[in-house]
Length: 502
Image (cartoon, rainbow, N blue to C red; front, side, top):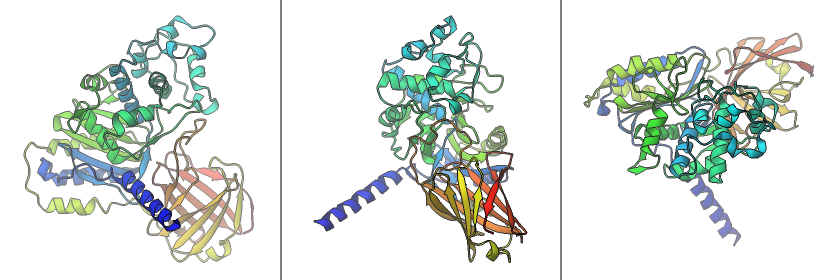
């Protein structure tokens, strides 16, 4: 009986694993030339993206005529890893609103205040009373954005609605809390969370199975950020919008809603804005766009979708211009004869790698500092102490958190070593209740080297998130200084060492 139960558990685990991974490599694949694109143009795009300063490319997918014609996941990243979305999440919320409107659960002209009668201020101003669902969709709520609000309180809706309101529908002011309210409204009218609603209406029909979304302290999907999803799923969603809501012959999202989402709805002083998505510089192109670099570019006149995930500190227009200027001008309408460039692309797209740490494999000092505990003062990472263990061409960093839990991070010499941890990765934003709704483990890839005999550098990429840390130990006369550089910040963090047994 025990053997039968064990076998059944194994089969269930295997089935779950296959189900979770089934969406990877599910879109049809083709070659650039078969779809009228020269491989050399794709190589130029990939090489240019990889060469960008202050940028870590995590994935790039190029689709034409509904087929993936090129893709790269620079090591240590891989197609099966989910990636956290910032404002790229908003476009999915826009789709959910359209679905609710199609089901007559919602109207663009519905007043926002009517959905939250118990959360309104004692005095409801005329402007607050006038604010509509459309105003939230177009970022014209009339409320001045307060990006710190989500970091300091847990009653987000009540706090937001208590703020002063100017005339809604007039002035564009980009604000993730507007999208959060849309998520709350979808939950109100459907009786289920935004994610569950999208699962039922879009994700399950499209076999997007490996997906999660952060949840606010109020039990609502955060909406304006917090979607956790794979690159190929982003590509599927891009194809859905490119094809005006149709997926494999079925109309999952109303075509007229897609047309409204992608049409100009508001002037911004820069790119035009639709419903929770942007119109691009390239004529007719639209995009979902998130901080630090998550893009779904939809280019109707070329019948193309391009997905990019990254962590970048440069203006995203740079990446888009590479697409407009280096790829699109070479896209044609007839198949091309494949040649040497295709073979080169096939080799290159599987061999791209983010830079490993440069330096020597060891230092004469390592023995003196091995397995020594370093206690830290209060810091943003929640680290209480660190301990280094040295192996041939490998360093193990043991991190003990203020909670008392410990885990090991592995770092390889001239290679990436991966490990899985239950601890949360570093995050560039700090809303109350961060990571609620997101389950681990989190996968970390590490590389190390000694740039000098007294400096040990560790690079850690959280490959199913967005973050990376560059940790440097500077050893001097039985003392140590530790600095941490986050890939989403220009300012290094110096950790306070309060005690050590070096």
